[in-house]
Image 1 (tube, one colour):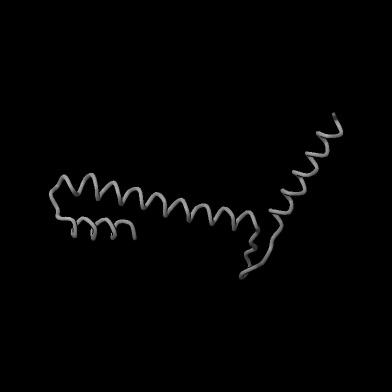
Image 2: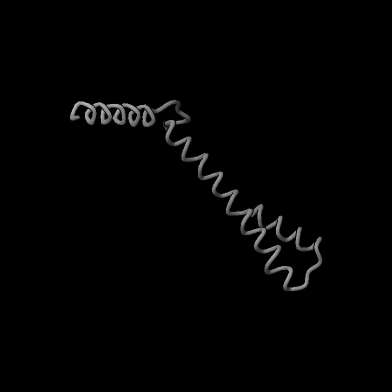
Length: 82
């Protein structure tokens, strides 16, 4: 059983070092695979949150204020881009 646990720890250690190893360099900054995955996840999260906020504004706030559909779409799209 101890052999299995030590082998699993070895595998995780190797994977960790693989993801942390710099893959390329731009300027004097080195970028690893884990940085790229984190960057992609942050970009996806920002797009997701901006879409949720835009829809909330469009369907909730702006429709209650009484804007017509075109105005709601324009304002929500501008907010989503910001």
